[in-house]
Amino acid sequence: MHPCQDCAIKCPGILAIYLWSTSPLSLLKKPILLPIGIIMLASLIAAALVLSKPEPKQVIVEQQPLLVNAAQAVKETLQISVRAQGTITPRTSTAIISEVSGKIIEVSTHLKAGGFFNQGDILLRIDDRNYRAELKRAEAAVASAKSALATELGKAEVARQDWIKYRSTVTRSQTAEDLALRKPQLADAQAKLDYTSADLDHARDQLERTVIRAPYQGIVRSKQVDIGQYVNVGSQLADTFAVDIAELRMALPDSKLNYLNLPSSHLEHQADAYPQVDLYAEIGGQLHQWQGKLIRTEGVFDERSRVLFAVAEIDDPYGLSHFREQPLRIGTFVSARIEGRQIENLVVLPRYILRAGNKIWIIDEQQRLQNRQIQILRTEGKNMYVTAGLSEGELICLSNISGAIPGTLVAVANITPTHDTDHEPSIPEEAVPADHPLDIAPAPGLIPSDDELNVAPPALDRNHPA
Image (tube, rainbow, N blue to C red):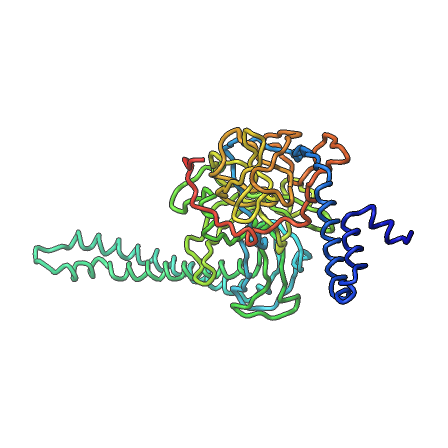
């Protein structure tokens, strides 16, 4: 039997096509019906396959919660500090000027750049021979004036006795009476004595000015003269500054003034009422710290920069009276942290959890993530201070989750009060099965700045609602 006949017997569709193709009538139409038969055959096979496919099995997929760390919101009363910077300057600085003229005959070994001196130390001497001569002449003039005054007093006494003895009943004018009693001559002698006494005091002062003494304990910044040099009145001899107190002038923008208890210039303050200022500077590769007090402001805003300058004082910067591990030298550029005032109802959170639009992830009672917009007082370092948007005891997600959406189911591994939270993202400690890895993003490399966060601190209110 032909193979095609065998197939036709087994399949009715193929049998019909075979009979038609072997009939005499099909011989005329065979080129047209062959493709149609093939199409029909393919359709029948496809229908048979679709009808014979098995039922799909239903598989229930369980949603695995993301394991996260959380912080519990704790409202606190905190002291917000303000950061500033500036250069250390002396409170007292002096340009020593010569008040007399002459040749310099002696210079102290302390009178050199960087030399320390104590109050009253002789820094230099000017030739005083001419001033000693002037003093002698002044003393002689005073002696002569005293003699003339004594003589005139004697004559006045004699005239008074004569006036009493020979006084007549004739009425005379007061001027004639004063002249008879030698009152004008006595006043002239007294005036000459006063004049010569003033010259004597001036001569003594001029002689004392030939010796230049230190007005305070300090350091020589620079020296302009040396031994043998002739100086005139008004010549600058040296620049010095005192080392009892140093100052730091800091620029404070108006947005930070509400954080501080600034001292008022018209009020008296106790020494312990001034805000403390911590100073930091890196010297020789090591970070050093000093303390000072914010004692005053300059009282006016700078017209160009719109900042208020505040001044802090540092006692004994060179450690002459009290030991210092590192002296705070004049000219040192330092960073400052100013002690701020107490602000209530603040929640401290790490900055890395803040997302665009001032939003963070909150974990609700169903252990699902929810978006929450918060109000930020300010950011400082790796912390941010939240004033509104959080309630006491709420859970904040600390894990930085990529691709999370509101409603994502989470499992809390650790709960930490907000005042004890770390500044960097952490991975939950509990182990997770290998087939369900955590979707936790790595810690950010840089902490965003205030400008990147676009956070504007509001006006402070101690009774601000959370």
